[in-house]
Length: 169
Figure 1 (cartoon, rainbow, N blue to C red):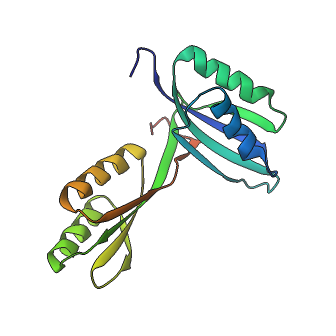
Figure 2: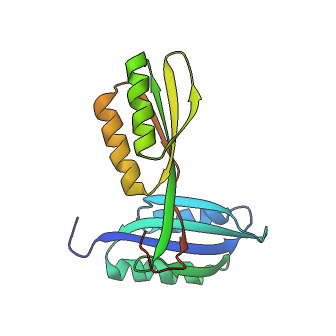
Figure 3: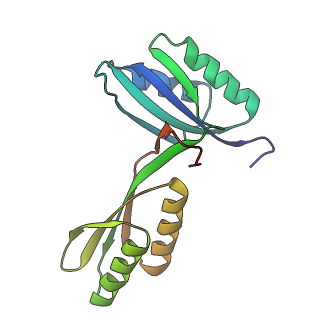
């Protein structure tokens, strides 16, 4: 990664309207900013959605991104999570196919170690659900890819909220 380049996190409160997600992702693509992660869902107020966005940039580019987002009519509030204590998790599903009985035992042990849940079970396959940090999910994907050849991976983007205590992500 270039000097000054690092992962930056932004949380946005936006109007819950058709086309808002498209406008925001269009701002990123139009300026050639990459979205590493984008998650959106409604809040306690059904007229407002909250987005959590990760992008890799330097300080100057990140300031530009925040200014451009703040200028959008549909954006209610922009919160910079980059240097804030945040609780952040992402969901990960890993389906392992063509399992032997011994493979299943190992997968149950992995699930227990990583505090995952086995959410579906078949004659020769297993579906695991992980809800943890992106870094931990990266580690578990690497581990399972090394041990098992026939896998399917689905990840959701990270969601985050400011921490009440001073603990980090």
